[in-house]
Image (tube, rainbow, N blue to C red):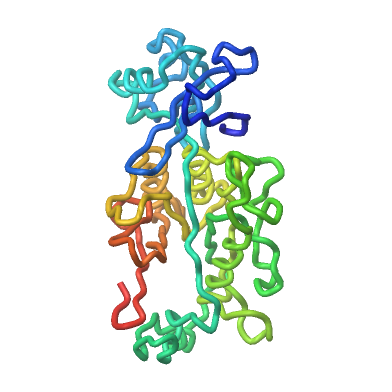
Length: 344
């Protein structure tokens, strides 16, 4: 996990490979919140209080952890030593008075929403298609009559990557892939989306679809119309096999950081994988903090931090009641369209 090889064993009694085998570095359990599996990966993430160094954390932990790296914004990553209980040491550090928060890093199941094709884009201009109610939409044509947007606005698309598509007219900028920071550049990796076990779980393309809805060019005889056809697209690929909660947070932190992605808006059309009927989203400190930091510290203009606009989809799954996107932060927008009578 976290880029390495791992095995998931459902029943230890059926396991023929001894835990003491030389090929096994450490063993860690799989936990579930409701039916959502959380696979800890032997690392912990924390945010130290001002003035606290990594060495002070290590000393407090009785040298049971090793420093791995500093994250993009304030977060520190440590690896537990063999035989150490990752939850026990995380709790010990959390209660130490040295940190704002601390928890194990984990392989985090996430899923994208399934966006409709242009003929079904009732949210732009609802004419009653698909048995919808006429004019229940975002009034896109009316907005375009006033403005089609500004080419100085940068929108970060946090998804499975955005390619340099002709309908985006050269407006896909340099991006970021947290698990491949040197060569990833926010572009899609391959054709298929694979999970941590190497199984194909979908096709790459959701990110470019979202970017098209955001910023596809108008009147060019190609594809669809985007809401803001002059916007600059900043791709951040968070859907790689080695993704963890920490890497997703790194993507968010890179996107808002004025010295890096420098985005004005963060667009997120993904959510944690949670069981049908679950209303309360899972809160994970490293991701929640990254979202809050984006809204408070992004959009640096003339020395003033105005804060980014952060938008999440609420999900396209009718059997699930309520919002299933991750952010618990106030001020984070969720869009929930209904064809029959309202847009919230």
